[in-house]
Length: 155
Length: 155
DNA sequence: CATGAAACACACTCCCG
DNA sequence: CGGGAGTGTGTTTCATG
Image 1 (cartoon, rainbow over the protein chains, first blue to last red):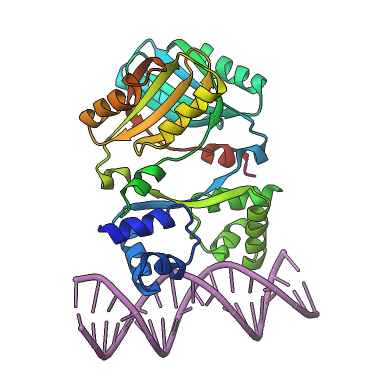
Image 2: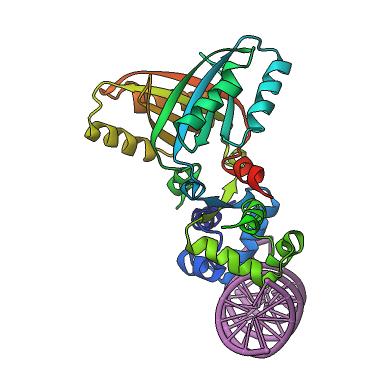
C-alpha cells in the first residue's frame, strides 16, 4: 500500500460511487490503474465493506444518548449475555465493552425522551446484573471515523 | 417510504455494490423498480452517502479509547473551539458534545498506549480549558449503527 | 511488475407500453 | 411496475517500458 493507494482511499472512502476515471484524473493515474488498485484494496481487506449511511431523522430518530453501565457480575458469560441483549435491541447503535470506571459504554438512538425512558426501564433497570448507569444526552456529533486519519496521511 | 423501501434499504445499506437485480429477486421486484426506488431514496436524503469502511488494523491501529472530558468554560465559543481542535486530530473518530456529568465524549483510535499517552498530553492535559477527563479502554466493539434499527422494521 | 489503451461484459438510465 | 434500447462503468486482455 503506497501513497497512491492512500490518495485513492481518501477519495473513494467518502464516496464509493465516484468513477475511477475521476479519481484517476486527480491522483494522476488512468482509470484502469485506479480500478485495479481499488480491487486489490478490497481483496486484501483494507476496504472491509461498502455501505450506505442513512439519515436517522428520516426514521423519526431525533435523539442520541451515551450510557455508561456498571455491571455487578463481570464473568465472561455475563459480559457476553449483556452484549447480546444490547445488540438485539433496535435502538442500540454501538456497544463498547470497556475497562475503566464502568463496564460498558453504549450509544442509543431514539425518537424521544419517552423512548429513552422505556429503554432504561426495560433494558437496564430491570436487569439484575446492572449495578448502575449514567446517561449523557448527545447535543451534537459529526461523524468522522477513519476519515481524518486517512486524510492526514495522504501525500 | 413503504415496506418495500425498507426491505431494499436493509440489503442495500450493508452492501452498496450489490446489483439491483439481486435485490429485486429477494424483495420481489424488477431491477428497474429497485433502481428507481434507490434513486428516490438518495434524492430524498434517506440515503445520505455511500462510503467504504476501512480495516483499522491495516493502518496499525490496534486500540480504541473513550474519553469523557469536562471543560471549565462552557460558552458556545469554548465548545466550538474544543470540537474543532478534536476533529483536527487524526486519531479522533467521534466527538460527541453532550449534557450530563461531562461535556464531551470522544472516541479515539490509536496504534498503542504511547500514542494514547501523547494524545492526552498534547490535546487534553495541556489544554487550559480542560478541567478533567477519564478514559475507558475499549476491549470489544461490534459496529451496528442503524443496522438493527432497519432490520427490526422490515416486513 | 505496474501501467495505459482497447475490447468486452455488466449494471444503471431512461423511455415506453 | 416491467421490459427494452442506449449509455456509462468496471473488467479483462494485451502491448509497452
